[in-house]
Image (tube, rainbow over all chains, first blue to last red; front, side, top):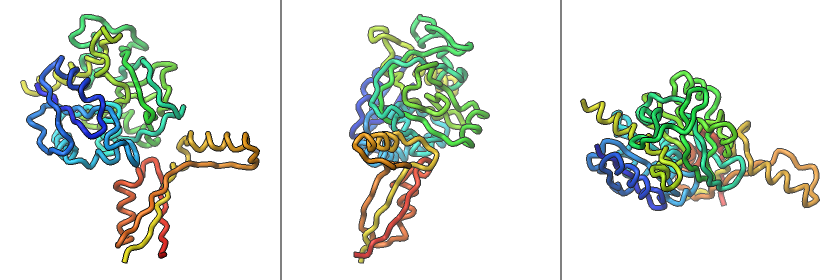
Length: 239
Length: 77
């Protein structure tokens, strides 16, 4: 199982994403100017400020050569995870519904957030019900039967928005995967939405950073289950 | 012969505009009364040979039609 981690000018979380992916499989960086995905079984679009976030976050990265390949890969059913700026890029590319807007508090905010795993049977959360992937720790707690992930968020453009019609469709299809827990929605996202998937379930984006929470040394390993889930989905598909 | 164009991009009506709200709150503090409906957007100025391309430019890149309205103003100077 091999992850391809994109790298744009202005990316800054690609090394942590690479490190997190290597905890569960092989991983390689893919430069934005290349079209070759180098045999990756899954793609991670990492956080940062791709192309300076000029115009709108993710608006220019969405047209990069590597993204042409990623869009084709996604349309063929390949797994694509977008984290923070990567989530913005996937929304701009229309691989995910909705858009990200400036935080309602107008501030860059960096804090640990508690996330409810609303959909626990997806290709990105299948391993999140029983603790952080390979970690032996059980989930810290649960709300209404939903596991809770404690992982950091750090952004100024994280207010998720989709219109009423889109939200209704997403609800019907189980596309809202993660919500901010009570009191955690600092950016003003509609319906406390923190992470969404596409209709087919092979593309997922979230604003918080699971790749920064893969070791208890840094306070939480809850993010690792996202990567473990992807490996399980890929290897299950191979059988 | 190129044409000078301005593209005005603003948040769609009904979508929370915290920048506009912050400016609206700041103005009375400076003594400017009677100000309402403040919205903050972006201005893109460009010279184009073919003004008919402006709308597809807006739809594909300059604006995000899901959350922003755009207005194209042509200026032959």
